Image (tube, rainbow, N blue to C red; front, side, top):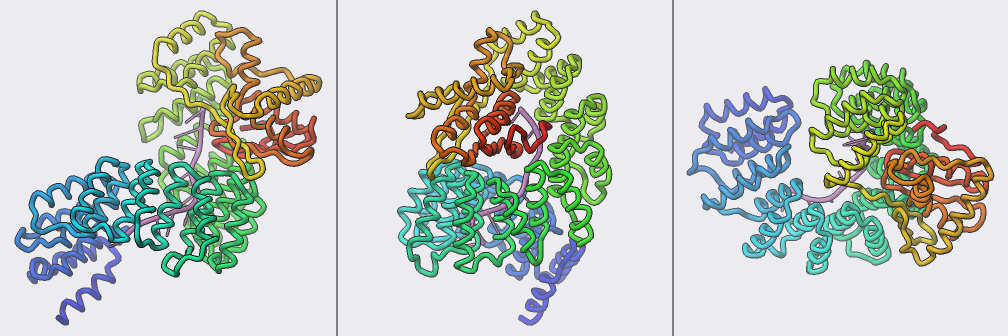
Length: 583
DNA sequence: CATGTACTGT
């Protein structure tokens, strides 16, 4: 029908919500809304999925479709819209209604959108049920649907189910491999993910399964998690061999991966090599600089290069810059950037960064005033940030206020108690210290175990605090004792202030001396040749004593030590750290 | 129709 073809052409050119509404009105007045399922469905999809659309409006249009005219594809469009939206779990409910009303019957497409909703809401029971339903409907050989299911299992933290599905598939394509690769990295089994990647590049797969750009992006992300620059090199080399490295998304992922593996120079080199940088390219480079403590460089890149190139910054851009200012102690610059935000409305995350910025600098009154003036309710992390600042600067009243807020919010984190206790201990208020200790014993305190790992000879060696699981633990502890003696000779006094003051001083020293990052460093001294660099990854932030120890070991043993903690990089060399002791 | 890069704080 010529009119329908014209209307399709017109619909593809809608660029505002007003266009959509006008189009919707036209379909209604001409009766086409009821008569032409393809036009109606295209309208609902555009309205539900496009950035200028409106999901509620799309769903209203779907509901206004007369029941007799509603097809499977109408349901598919509505379910797809919800699955891609802010509350994907709603798609499961709509699907249940569809099953109850059937006909129309669900098809592979319906299932695939519902599975995506289950994946996005990490709903394992729903995923299992949908898997069973897919088999019952005879859709077990649909590669796309099974790939979506595989992805859902991975996103529901069930890597074994994802692997099993993969192994049982008679036919796969590259998206299947990629879903497994990315899923393993997510689970988080980045090491297994890289093993899979090596299998992919060493076997000669048919064209349909040949690695593509997304393979590279997913593999780079696994390397980033592992903190293994050598593996990024291998991924990069492979991408170059296959001509997959011209893609800007691939280069963005490599910038991010190299930066997260400590190779800032290589990250920036690739960033410079990108001919048409996207917003993500700039954000990755800014975050790389921030993570390595180069806040001033991040600011300069933003102000002197990104803004003049007419790339509009987004929320992530500002987070990267604020984060760079936090790590570099650039209080005034950070405040200036924060106040300059016009095009992007600051979110709770931006406020959090600025509160941290002020708090670390000791400007506690301003930090608290900003919290009070925030257009959001402060979350736990924000109060933890303030509590940490109060501890660093010995502000009992603020610490108590923050701790009370945290308690009211049901937070039971070990760190909250320790910080508050430290504030009292610093003022010799031992009764209060005892009160906190009793509260900790009375409540069910949640503690995130700290761990560190280091890679030696392609093997990951993982340590917990006080860990004796490693087969070379005796040697590791002996080396640690020897290092302790050497750095005491250099004037080191153990910093035990981060340990709860309920044990003897000697025990506190032992507690910090067995921190996982020290064990990993000691293992590095044991297992790598003299003079070679040591790289440690820690899941939490490095503690003050470990930081001081790392500096002195770098000097006493002539080693460059890199520690990536959960927030940033520390590079220790010749007794100094790249963070300048501000972190 | 499926797979993917940038995201404050403990």
